Amino acid sequence: MRDKFSKSNINTVSGNVFNGPTNIVSGNNTDFNGSSSGKTATYTPEPVWRSPITMAILSWMGIFISLIGIFPFYKLFEPLINLFTNKSIQINANNNIIYLGILVIVIILLAIIAWLRDITKRETRHPLFFNYAISGLRRKLTIEKIHIDKCPICGGTMKYFNKAVEWENTTYPDGKPKRKVTQKVPALQCKRNPDHFFEVDPAADKLDSKSR
Image (tube, rainbow, N blue to C red; front, side):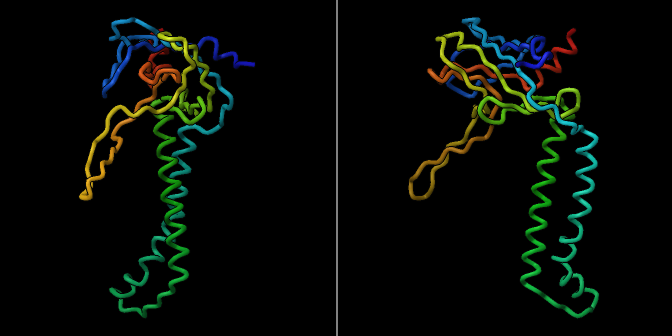
């Protein structure tokens, strides 16, 4: 059963076939114009878990975890501090590995919290996997299921994901080429023909609320 809010939260995107790093963002009601065909892809986000985690809670979590990270950071550099303070230097390799591990975990947690806080601050939606998304609408984290209509060009099934639109091609000294993705955007893409895709504005719902 869909959430009662999802019925009034239908988003549309439109576009055509793109073969290069072309970004089209314009219009109202999540419409992405610029296509000569005028085709429109539609999707409906259905909230499946409304978390109690707000931007304020994420801010306090970041502060708390930062304070925890001070201890392993100090212990790692304690021998260097003792060297400048003329204190005896005692180095325990096993303890240093433990402190380093804790510090790495703290840094990873801080990066995740910063990313989630940015989502709630900007009130944007971002793809996760299997047509699920994370949204920061109303400054609160929500997990959503994205229901997508058939491809408006060929009728194929579509998926919602982060699509690479810009990349750099490099060649190693041994002659092997490598492509490094430099930019991804949320998009709806046809599974039948990958050339049929439509870029999605991550701030679509916030723009809609302002236009009402």
